[in-house]
Length: 123
Image 1 (cartoon, helix red, strand yellow):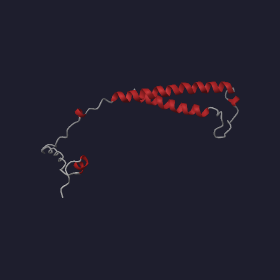
Image 2 (spheres, one colour):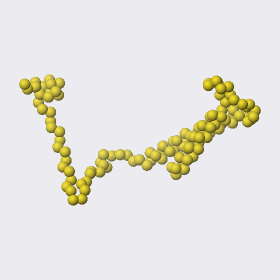
Image 3 (cartoon, one colour):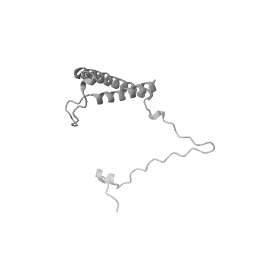
Image 4 (cartoon, helix red, strand yellow):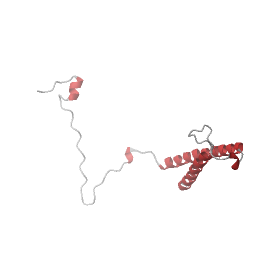
């Protein structure tokens, strides 16, 4: 299902890019002037309506397939829990590694005690 939807999504993306590139520039943004005769494809007004509708339909299809792909991808992931983590086991014939010792508490006169205003460092 996901691969079929991804293929449809790619077809929609390529079609949308092609339709957008076919549209005539209204402002002449890059100074290209519009190209050939608009009457060669359809009338100027009919061509604009057709390409505008096609762009709207392909844009809607793009958003729909994007949302569906993200929903399918999120459905495959479950909530992660630290309780579900697997503890490492030792290979056969070896003992399990010893747990790491807890960190030593801060010594009196450390920087933390100085910041708290506690005991002065020993000299």
